[in-house]
Structure formats: C-alpha cells, structure tokens
Image (cartoon, rainbow, N blue to C red; front, side, top):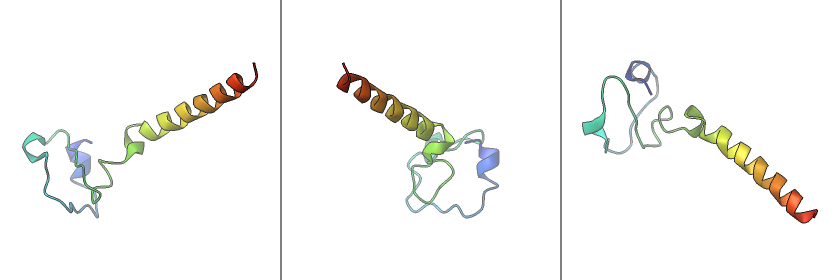
Length: 68
C-alpha cells in the first residue's frame, strides 16, 4: 500500500514488532500483522476475487467430469 495512504489511516496498531522495518519505505508499506487491516487483507490485491473464480472453475470441472 502506498505510504501516503497508510499514514493517514485510523485505528492501525501493530501487535508484533515490524519484521519488515528495514525494507519499508515512504513509497510503499506492508505489515504481516493482524492489527494492520489495510496492508494484509487479501481483498486489497485481488486474491479474494481470484479465489472465488478458481473455486467456480473447479466446481464446473467437477460437473463436467461427472457427466461424460
């Protein structure tokens, strides 16, 4: 996430020390911490949407393999 956006968010509290501190920059930020809802959510990078699509394709494949 862009650092400019992250720095203006409310309610962010890291519960563990920032293991990526030496790699953080003013441009982008990432925290692998449940207290930072903004940089660790799968919906932020499209992973949730991809999971849905792949699941739908898997179900379609199962239907096709059961109906030869």
